[in-house]
Image (cartoon, rainbow, N blue to C red):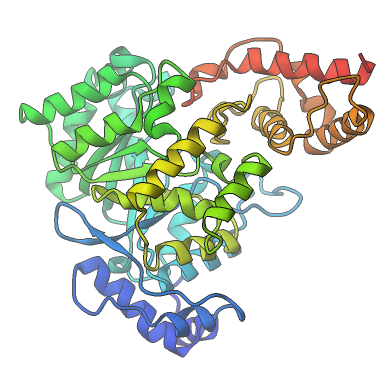
Length: 471
């Protein structure tokens, strides 16, 4: 696709938004002056009745470049209704992606994060199509070397993956390149993916050539891997321009409580801040779970501050820490994007009292028996056709709504039983439900949250069977 011309841009966002928003996004990327955004013109021209916003909050990377504190995660892109008719299985709604990206850039967002592994392998292509319509200097694009599968561990396969990223993104260089999700599988896995094949040194060479402007990694799992990466930097062996971690007000102190293989974000952030390594935040909403909490917790948050959304609490938590470069949000719908813009334009940091309050909320939230699924879909596809995220997220939804029937003596039991079974069948087709799991175990090693997926599926299947038999 060609770049958006002036007439089309004005048609979409209005004259004031185009003049002020485009120049602000462009100059913010180059670190120049004039980044102030005319909020009323920008937002008012797009959707009538929206709450006006101010200027985007920016942070500086190690090169002194301005990066929007709200980053766009291209992991959960909108799809076409009814599924794709394309032979390659690409069901991304490109027109809607273009609209979202256009709106984000017009309102100051300049960091876009993707991967060869996202959206069934089609996220980079969709991201490239949307961004290529804008001046290259108006955005930063981040992608990853997602060489998870053993067949991609060879030097040639990993090099080709990087070259494919450049092609799909339609760029001559990547602004931010990450070693993807290191820590899962420990140092043995890391060495197989990046060291034994010499690919990490090769990536350093690509950075020296200008094909990569910032080199870093995203982390899940074994803290030994994380500590080793920072030790190498301390020793001058490698330099990390940024690091991406999972950080939110639940994982800040309680990640390890949820799973012994996880690492508390407080430790990860602290070690990076000591070394002045900019931090990119993934899962600030725990895969959306911090917006789909039990009703009385949601009411509690609204009573504390009725001005913002439930999501805004989580994003403000991340943005309060000065070492955070950008917080990623997978904004599938325009209302997600608009709500997040209200939070970050500008960001209002939390007070110490607010942080203490969110710790109380985190402790309360952890008392609920939900499954820590972030809907990343790394466990998919299931070889037996199960909709693993759909099953787990439906169960979480019913727990949060307080509609899981537990006691036959409860006067509401029969109504809740019927509601649960009907909603389950609607959410997940019968052939893809939990009772079809044979415990092959192919899903669990890919889960960043270290969920014992077969055990959870069997637990849910047994509960559904009890409800169906009314026992």
